[in-house]
Amino acid sequence: MHSVIIDCHSHTRHSPDGSETVLDMCTRAVELGIEIFAITDHCEAHEFGGDDISSAIKNCIEDIDEVSPKFSGRMEILKGVELGQPTQNTAFSEKLISEMDLDFVLCALHEMRGYDDFYFLNYYEQDIHELLTRYFDELQEICEWGKCDAIAHFTYPIRYIHGRTDIRVNLENYYEKIKSIYNIMIEKGIALEINTSGLRGDLGDTLPDYQCIKLYHDIGGQLISVGSDAHKAVDVGQGINDAIAIAKDIGFKKITYFKSRNANFISI
Image (cartoon, rainbow, N blue to C red; front, side, top):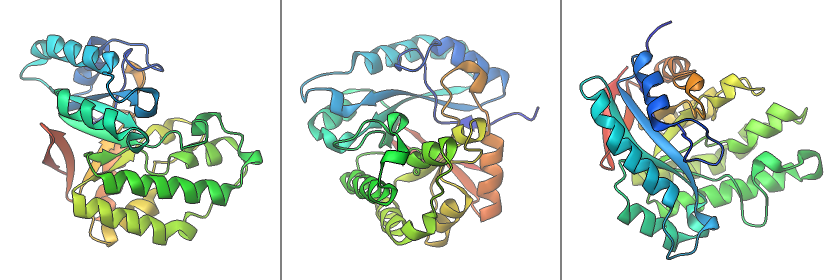
């Protein structure tokens, strides 16, 4: 197996859907030869009050601080968060970002206003066009808010629409909207993540897919993050080399990661 150099999306037991320790995940990352590894446990902003803190993220950061010296000189561990629905609770989101010692803020839209998480929806009962239109509208709102470093799994609903049903979406119908979002991301220095979780599941593709990534490149996007979205140690690094190969084929020369909220680059 070829070594993997970077993975900037992973979850530990501090996420509701994770089960393994920071040490477990980091040990696996080192075994794979990963040099830059970001732990980005879930924090769904709409579930908190504006004055709350996230004890899970606080505890995760403490674990990273404790574990990091064990990997000194072999791997850099980045303290991240996957902040879901940040604009549904901007008071909490901005408090979290300002008060936590974070290297990397990865934002996502898992659950739109008035809907369950996309994971739980019955897509045969949904107006798919309305659903995706609302999704991209709220994703644009997140990018306009702009206090994040990257957008996770940009086409998240497709993971379930294509992965679980025979419904097929032609994303080209949404390209003008997607380009508008990309332009905001470019202006604000927000990276586009190539999320490889779909390669392990029924979807069989990255999120977003090749053509959506190419669209970002073609309008001038340069900041590409890569993440396995691993929720267990066995999935750390999975698909990352495929994501890097896609980025290189499209024409990207470097992969982006964030330390102390500043963009850094690895040539590919």
